[in-house]
Image (tube, rainbow, N blue to C red):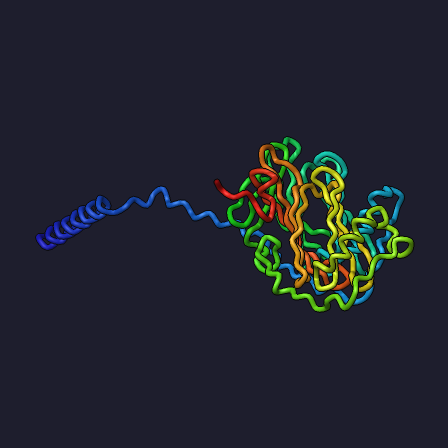
Amino acid sequence: MRLASYLFLFALLVSTADAAAAEQASRGATPDWPPAPAASPGWDAPRFEKYPAKPSPEGSRAMPRFNGSNWTPETKARIRKAVKSGYNFAGHYTIVEVGCGTECKSAWVVDGRSGAIRAFPLGGEGTTSLKLVYNVKSRLIKAARLNSEKVLCTQQDFDWDGKDFNNIVGMDHTDKGIFFRCDVLDSGVSMEWPSDEAKISPGDELSFETFPARVFQNGPVKLPQFNGRDRGAREYRTRITDKMKSGANFAGHYTIIEIGCGTGYLCVYFADTNSGKVWDFPLGGMEYSNLELKYSLDSRLIKARWIDGLNGDQADCAESAAEWDGRNFVSFGKTHRAVADETYCSFDPPQNE
């Protein structure tokens, strides 16, 4: 009987000590409720290098095939001109962007092998301030546009499989950190992906020395045949001839001719000083306000900047770069960024006072 009493007393003492120790421990411990919020995973923006394209094929390009009867003569002309300028998307395709009214843009992809044309899934009436970013080395294309209420910017990324644009991700947002910036300013959209195109983005400092000219002018300048082969440039024959007589200024044996054709607009041609042949330059005219070009006699690289629209008090500066391969301009893609005004889109922005 006495032993049972001792055992009961011992158990009571132990349980009391355990309870006191537990209480002491609980007072000194950090409460584990509510649990610490889990870190929000960063948005893994699709990157251009994760969707590589096959290199563009050798040989001649197929002419665009305009199936159906809904094509306007102006749109056909724009597409034909763009295709002649070379591939700018997914290896052997050309993205062609055409304005269709105030804040309206349509886009098509043209297959350089077959000539087939496929409409980009966004654009046209009902799509406001569409912006596209793409390059020739990737199947990925990034798009941004304003929603119908002009409140949020909708961003979508697509993977082109040769037949269809497959939506990778799409969301409404105004900011996605270092991977994506989409500023909605009044009725415009500005985009840039500063880290996605690290090796091939026109926003990077592509070096002119990396693309040296291979062939230089090999004698007197040969002038164009404005009554024959080059009659399409006849309207500006005097300006073109005078500029060519000064010699080559681009890629060894070519002359870039910049001609003012309206307030804030340039009409641009380039000609071969060895053969006299003249081409329309891919950029220029009323869709490229404040166009500026940067090029060199010793390099095949050319850079361009222009105003692609106004976002309230800010300008939407578009940038692009391309390499001349002797037959076509191979584009490194296009980016957009917001700037304080048109002057800050220049290659020589105003200096601080």
